[in-house]
Amino acid sequence: RQPLRVRGHEALSPVQPQASDLNALLQHARTLPPRKHQELVAKVLVEQRRREEAYFLEGSLIEFFKAAWPVMDPAVYQHGWHLDAIAEHLEAISYGQIRKLCINICPRHAKTLMCSVAWNAWAWCKSPDERYPLIGPAARFMCLSYGDMLAMDNSTLAHRLVKSDWFQERWGHRVQITSDQDAKNKFDTSSGGTRISGSFRGSVTGRGAGIRVYDDPHKM
Image (cartoon, rainbow, N blue to C red; front, side):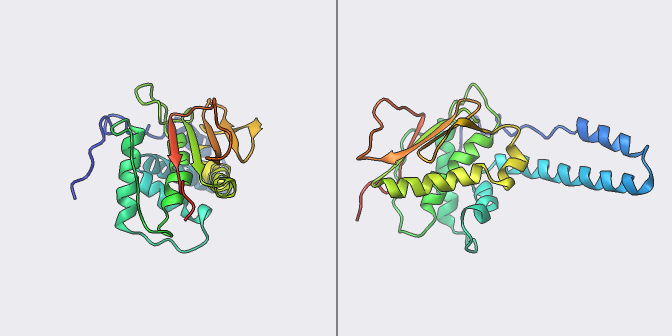
């Protein structure tokens, strides 16, 4: 299988972690007594590793998905080639290479967690770029399912992921949920992004989004 080539993906690599503030802390550590020096250096190294991890995860949806799995599901993660394929095509949508995508796969293969939960969080954690309006914390998602209960379950997981300590420690400087619009069926970011949830029987008239996800549109 030939990999999908995402236009502009190489030019839009994640922003390298800025180390100026960490270097300043290391310089300050040299002036401290030995014990406090060691404590501050240890904290700086932890923060640097966290920034490097965030930089790496921003560049790959599948790697973000693996790292975020414990927040989304307590079960042990089991990788499969189908997840690579799904993530690759979702990235292509985010970068504007393809506009429509239909995924048909057996139940219990993590399609929902990838498309309706992780994809939204990954798009928000990336640095905004005016060339690609579907990525960055201003991206707007609408996620619909056949029933309100299923849609709310997915929305709850997405909300929990974005507000988790794991996510906020890495991207809290970029992604914050607004206090005045923080509900299960719709929550917004302070940068103008949104995630709208509902069923096809519900009322979504007048609401728009750059990315629309129809997950399990039919009840079997």
